[in-house]
Image (cartoon, rainbow, N blue to C red; front, side, top):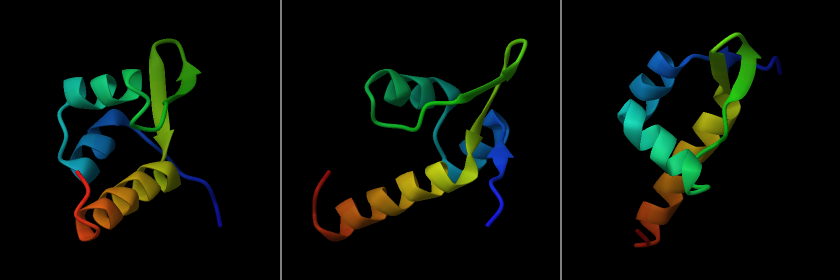
Length: 65
């Protein structure tokens, strides 16, 4: 399986979170850290973002918030 790096716009679209929420979750250790891509550019591994979403679904299904 090929790794795919996604930009912030796509992370926002996939998660429904705002930019500030994503960075707040990162600061709290509750969201995957971005990969530095170059001068002022970062991206996320799509698989890590999807794993985070799956974990949130599992928490929901178990009644955990």
